[in-house]
Length: 316
Image 1 (cartoon, rainbow, N blue to C red):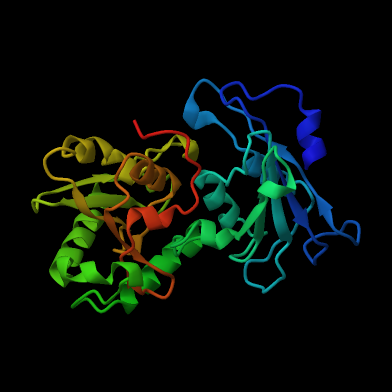
Image 2 (spheres, helix red, strand yellow; image 1 turned 45 degrees about the vertical axis):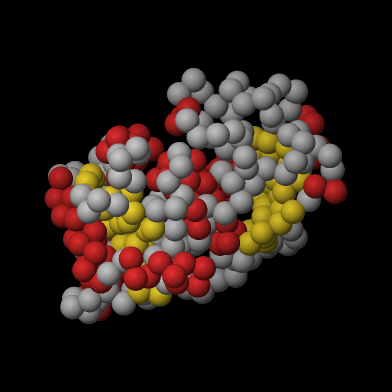
């Protein structure tokens, strides 16, 4: 991976550092290629539109689809990507961005325990590693599912839920705050988020609609919904649609509890763009109502959703 980085003479057009990523893959039933380990390499690059940028990790993973892989989601197969190695000419190791974490974890070639190893320009002394799933905790119950599978999962979780109350597992480090978040408050924010999905009328683009709701310290609330686009990457995230309303309350009544839910009432942790907004813009202490693929609820803080983010400066 280091050699691949050195071969690239120019830096990306916006960032001043070069980044290279190489997923190391093992021969599996998915492939009809050489009976040995192999790798692909991706580089980062950006356009003048910051949201239209591509990280090294996603650039590398997209190449895996060109290897004549066949994947049957109904069968249990071994993970293809054994590890992802990331090197940079920045001084220290650079952890994957939140978009990259989500994209890699969504891939059929990875699992929670897929190793991510990072190294900076100073060499081996800067190395660190982490399991991919630990970099993106509380992933959506729909992770790795196609659109039909997402609908099926949503219906299942909705039908299994006890409608009378929300039973919550509070992360141990936040147990002292559980008294602040009553069942009524949790159900209120969930229903507000679910109701917000009614503003989405583009089921022709994707069958799942997302809404987001926030309850502020003074008891007031706000909600918004995802705005889908024909090219999915141009869609507007539900949590980010709340950003102007949350920022407006910055000095008077900060956000206390957030929820992003779909039309079935399933609560999802914010997706990568929503997580980045909350953590990088000063809302890491806000609680978030989330649900796993077994239907169990948790209330982590937003900061718990994005561990190990590089410090590039203060939020704007």
